[in-house]
Amino acid sequence: MAKNKPQIGDLKNGMVYRFTKGFVVAHAVHTISFLTLLLTGLAIYVPATSWIAVLFGGIQSARIIHRVMAVFYAIVAPLIMIAKSDGQMKDWLKVAFTWKMEDILFMPKYIVTEFMGRHGDLPESDFINAGEKVNSLLTIFTLFGLTISGIIMWFPNVFPAWLVLVAYPLHDLSWMFMTCMLLVHMFLSLVHPKMRTALLGITKSWVPVEFAEGHYPKWYRRVTAGKKDVGA
Image 1: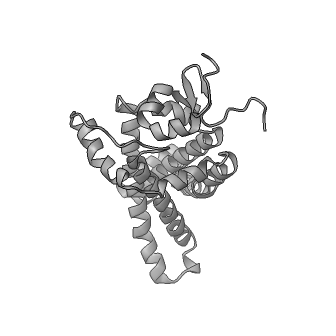
Image 2: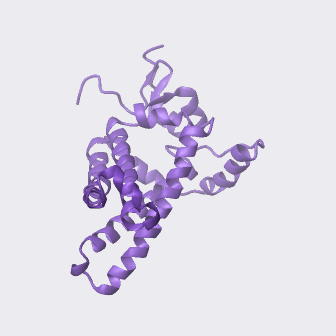
């Protein structure tokens, strides 16, 4: 391990190390590959958007790119996260699949507080909040849905005809769900004034201490216990 390699929870110049480099890279690969799959898929299967194929050099090129990027989406990104996240993927999965009453109470209070402009005390969040847990779980399930249905569609002669027929609507539902989540994700990270700071974490690994304390207090206290800001 590199001597100066930052660890989760390290503090420096008012910033806290939130995501490992492997997690950041895997997120980027996942995002870019899904967007490419979405665009090439629309070009291939939706007549009204077939013009998108021009961006990829034609319909045949779009088909090839779609299959190549499917491998990155379903295999490469998860492998990067498993191998290079220094255990953060394990923590993410554990938190995403762990639900408590405070998580159930979080969503209605968050809507009232953030979108209706009313004051409310939100339950304290750990590594991710309840909304992000929903996003994480749907991402996992849609990844499996897209992957399994995609394999069946890729090799239709290997599977029973009825299974191939089921694969097409499953594939459609999966990418539609994923696209809706992506739009919400983009709104929160690019537009929402209180959440835009989160983009720093998933692009540069570090977020301001104030942001981490305010949005993920349980996580912040846990990972920074006993640590001091080396840049202070």
